[in-house]
Structure formats: C-alpha cells, structure tokens
Image (cartoon, rainbow, N blue to C red; front, side, top):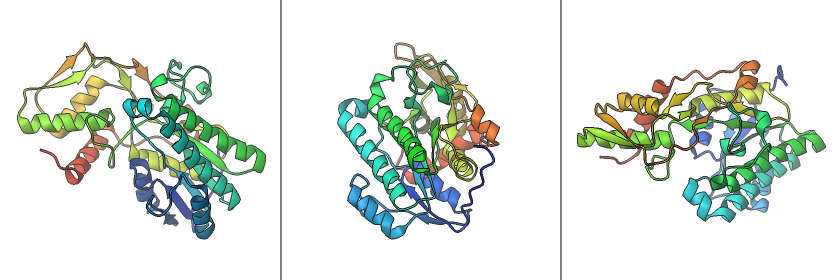
Length: 316
C-alpha cells in the first residue's frame, strides 16, 4: 500500500547474501541509514540448515531482513543441477522466512527473478503475469523456487499478519557482478570481451545474434536504493517489479560498452547464433506510482562496473 511509513532508524537489518552483487550493494546503501547492518557468512551459518538459521536469528534478533541469498547460475548450471537449484533455494528462503516469523521480525523483503514470468509473457511484463503460462524450461527450477518464496511471503502475511514483501528486479549489472565470459550475464561478458579486444588491438569484436533484441538493464546501486524505498514505503501482498522502464538493443549496449572501455574497433554479429527473446521489458508502473524511479544512466553505470572490474580482477 502506498503511503506506508516504516522507519529503519535504530533497527538491526540483516542482509542475507551480503557478499553477492545485490547483497553488497544493499550493505553500501544502508550505510547512509540510521541502522545497524547484520551479516553472516556461510562459513559461520549454512542458510540451508534450519537449526543454524534459527539459532542465529534467535541470538541476533534482527528487526528487518533482506533476502538476497540464493544459489544462482546460468543455463548450463540450471540444466545440470536441477535438484540443487530447487532444493537449495527452497530451503534458504523457507528457513529465513519462517525464522523471521518465529522471532518477530518487523519487516522482510524477498527478492525474485525475472524468470518467474511465463516464457511468452506479454511485454512489458506486469506483476499480474505471474503464473499465467509455462515457464522457460532452461531455468524453471530456479523460477519455481523464487515463485515459492513470493507465495511464502504472501502466506505468512495472510495467516500471521507478517509484514513480508517481495521485489522483482530486472537485468542487473554493476560492482560485484560475475565477470566471466562463459557464466556471466551479458553486461559483464561484453565488458570483458571489449577490454580484451582493446588490449589486444583487435580491429573487431564478435557478438552473438543480430544485435536487435531489446533488454532492460538496472544498475545494482539503483536496485538497492529501490529496496530501501520499498522497505520504508510499501506493505502489501503483490510483488513489485523494479526496473528502469528503458530498453536498449544489444547493439546499443555493446556500443556504449565500447565507448566506456575505449574499444574503437567494429562489432561483428554472428547471426548463426541465437538472439534469445526479442524483447524482455518490465512493467514498472506500480513502482513509479509509489514514487521511485531509477536515476543511474546506462553509461554512468557501465563506467562504475568497468572500474570495479579493473580494480578487482586479473585481466590482460
């Protein structure tokens, strides 16, 4: 519901998954709030073990929980490790959400994934598209776990009156991304390829497909800001999409990355390779109506992501 006022002042906020791209961005964003940030590594607490999670929550007594912890991976990982993706994500979210109920957490925010929507969902994808059609088979295990997490938050809200909410981010990039050409997402992969092409003095850089598919990209710092906004101002059962509302073709993305990295060669498109979905855009009208919009431009966000890559990875 719009107009909800929830203060983070003086609260203990547990960011589960604080070492990942989203979790680390959330920790940075919360540094400007008057709250105490709680974190715990997997070396201390295995989030898949209910007793360990409940013991830690009983001892630390967080007031607010943000669930950014998840087992993630690309198409190959999802295809070869289906039970891991379904089981690990189900138990992580179940343990934390149930523990939050047991120990009186005032507010909980669960993060979904764009794969929760049907493979052929109408564009732009509205929140109401959930469960209206078949999922994309290549990541259905992860999607089912994320849908279960959203529904679990709704169930605890309905049965116990818990202030548990869910947010659904679009394609993310920024500091902490997985910079791996094979396993990473498109932004990180293109940054690596453009950097290598620049260093090697290559006259051209090859990209898969035609370069025409449209995609939406959100800087992870903007996502963290949106999540803080939702913690303070949203309390209702439906999940909320979080995106920019702006689309870019893969060619436009590559050209902007080339500009940021300093690659001045040409882009060659291997049209024998697949494009994927022609368009994937979120309907962000509900979030906009609440009063939040993304503020980081694509080029500005890419400059920050490239700087982080240079500072944190070995590279040519």
